[in-house]
Image (cartoon, rainbow, N blue to C red; front, side):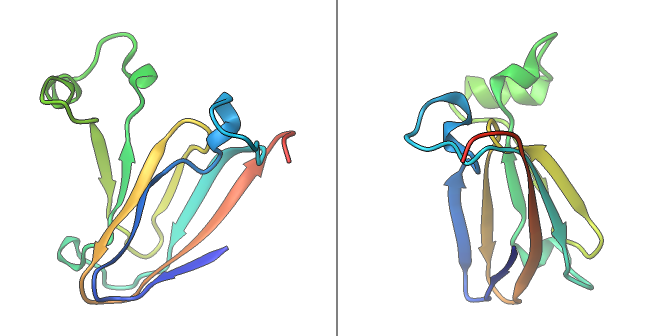
Length: 121
């Protein structure tokens, strides 16, 4: 799938690509991994549109980082922002990682997404 987020503040709310991979929703799409490849030449952090990955608590096993612990103490989910620069590839668990697209105030943002599936459907 190719996604275009036009400028003007477009965004995508927090979601999970395979909501029923953990049995919480009514349909399992079978998505296990998400691959997002960014197609934006000359993109800078100021252009916005970052992919924000919310770090699941399970990833903190073995000792959370001080940043993650501080975020949780403040009532926020720890997160990592991926700037959508050309030739950047983000890979994460489709059934466990909440994510969102931060607002794109000016430029159009392009990304190609592919999912690895296993069962479901």
